[in-house]
Amino acid sequence: MKCRTVVVVLLATAAMVQADFITGMSGMYQTAKDVVKAKARIGERLISNVPLLLPSFEEIGEFGKQTLLGYPLEAIAAGIHSFCSAAVATNGTEPFFEPDLTRMNYVLMTDLGNYSYPLAQAGLLWSSPLFYKHLDTVILVTGWLTTIEEPNEAAGALYRAYRARGEFNFVVIDTVSLLNTLYTWSSFSTNNLGSALGDGLVELVEYVPVQSIHLIGHSLGAHISGAAGRRFQEVKGFNLPRITGLDPANPCFNEGENLSGLSRGDADLVDVIHSNVRVLGKRDPMGDIDFYPNG
Image (spheres, rainbow, N blue to C red):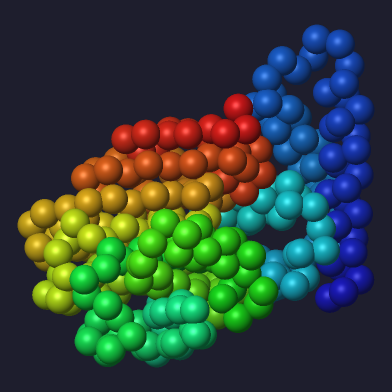
């Protein structure tokens, strides 16, 4: 398997190098879409020459985060996107991955430490003496390449930023235990986890006013947050006040592919920050307000 993986990586690298050379020639490709199409065509031609050396969909689907993190993010994004598209086109995946919610937790971050509560038992968190009902509540849903158990600079930075503004309940939902392979990304039903979070928020508004709740989702977490907002609206008949998407994931969330993502209408205000649009994040506007800090 390792040998075959190396072959795939070498083929992909060769395809990218050849495509970069060709796209550097004058006037042939004018847009980013042209470049992507050219690289895809070249990669397909190279791969078609060695079909017996390539891993199957099942083998590719088992590629984990640690396997992929040694490669450039551009290559990871292209690989995930290609895997999703090809798997959908050839029925190469099983039905949607069903998350085991017993493996997931709310993590309440405080100055004294982090405290975990089962996602399926949201009332344990909302009724905890460590959860202050008079404060606004921020809920961060992490993405595929982040985890609260590893040093998480993004979650830590957000927590410190909110603490600098005053007192908040800052809660993190860590998705990495369920989303650790390409298969679980490409076949993952955001609605399942989003619905579980949405049901938890339905319980939360029994303790606090809905206006005090702000969902923030990074990468895949942005789409999970959108699903949570839709579930909340379905049950309660009104929207959450705000969902913020941080680089909502692009691979697998395109027209014709399986997964439904964050969009305007999932909350009263959906604001999206696109800072990684050429790699793992979506470029298209999705919210009521879309920011592009890197142009």
